[in-house]
Length: 250
Ligand SMILES: [Zn+2]
Ligand SMILES: [Zn+2]
Figure 1: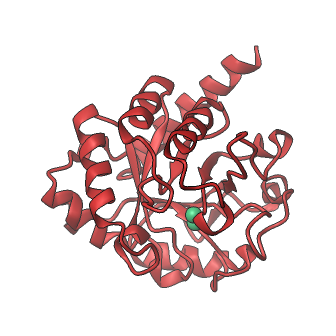
Figure 2: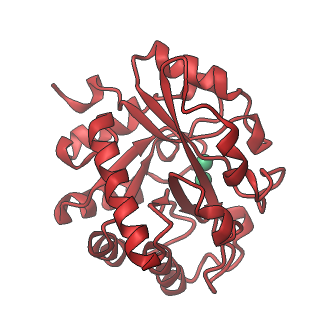
């Protein structure tokens, strides 16, 4: 079966009204995931540095949530903002550690020093070395250039994931296509594990990654490298993550 006929069982990057500029509730997102036959989603609100973002204690307060909503497993997560080339995040470690899955992203409009490719690359490498961070969010963004070879190599070395973000195929992140293709091919060359995510800001977007899967089909990307294609594979990664974090704490 070709990739574009599949829906990942777990969407690893989703937002709700808590993010301030998204439009659906967690329940609406879960019902949308259920309607698509999915099994889980990562709740990854933006950190507080983004306009209208969630408070920094959100990862901690997600402990209040049930593990499942209408049969959909809700993985407690965050999309932390990288603040500068000194590698500061807008979620301190004492809150980050409550996450089951953490994405670190650079958002172009709040990163004025984004033209410096070498410094962007060094910052991404530092994020990959942070044991609490699982994945870089949309590093293909051409307005924040980086060295794909270097980040893919480091992600492999650190056992981390890289994101294929469906919004890179839409008007949301314009002009991304050439850089996205180069990034996908670089991951393919290195056998790098990835997640394909919707970055949904509205419930109809949950699990809707057909455009990027179609592109991955064109580029002959291997299905076995997509960690969130099945919940079993994603849970196996989470078990690895637990071991990694406990090894660092020793
Ligand atoms: Zn983002
Ligand atoms: Zn996002």
